[in-house]
Length: 351
Ligand code: FES
Image 1 (cartoon, rainbow, N blue to C red):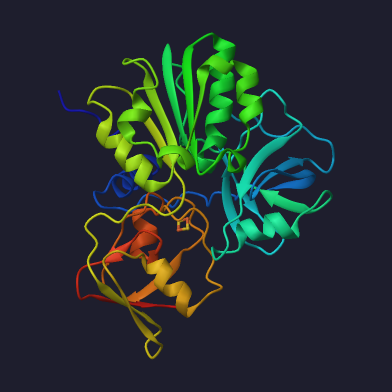
Image 2 (image 1 turned 180 degrees about the vertical axis):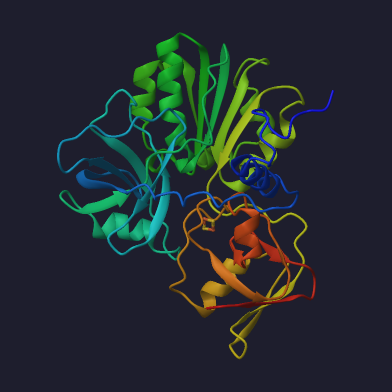
């Protein structure tokens, strides 16, 4: 049986159906770019006021921050960090060390680093009760999973994310041990607070007795099946990662710059005619750029905050960050705190 030209038997093709079919063909055409998503609206930063600023150990200040309007602060979980924007405009990440149940206050502890990027010195010398600053909502890349037995290993100021984990482990009745290593007792904050949770579960190891403890000694402080959480300087993390047997849960967070695996020397140039500098295999491009442009902003040093973003106008970068989208990379964005280039390559940057 012949089909009618359209469902109603009309002799001419239906113009509405023709248009609809043409639109469908165009929409489904292979390779057609999907409509660009609406640009995400940036989340406004939280306004904060300093409600407490106190020296709690040698070279360590505890900062307490609240809402200037008395509002509740966004929730967080042990292991979370906030990115602060200081009055100078510097951006820095710090782990929250207070109690997540207290929605009125963010607590953090900052060790003074002379000769660093100036963020810690600004917090120590430039802030006081009443100072205003802003922050991004807390984010957590070091979540506490609450395994039945946990070993918390803190190097120096790396104690900050582990303190709320110890509190949480105690609250849940887990089998927990916290080991805090440091130069000497005077430089190690939160000793009383930790011992107040359960003194039998807290071990302080200071370098002034036998030098820094080795990874095997650290791991031996907890039960053999304990999940390991470690936060501290890069050499401590590397040693612990090496020493924890395969298959045993290991969670870690480093502070400071990420190590540079398989780095090769390359060159950066500031503009077509600008100064040129070599980036050695063991240094980041950000470090080298900051010698030429000391005001170049940065924060995490680990390729996830985006603060150090620059634009490449020539040369082929080797992206090593965890933040930029393929479209942003194709448009020339580069995070020089972690990203590099092949040996002998020259990256020309719009700076
Ligand atoms: S400083 Fe955070 S991405 Fe480079």
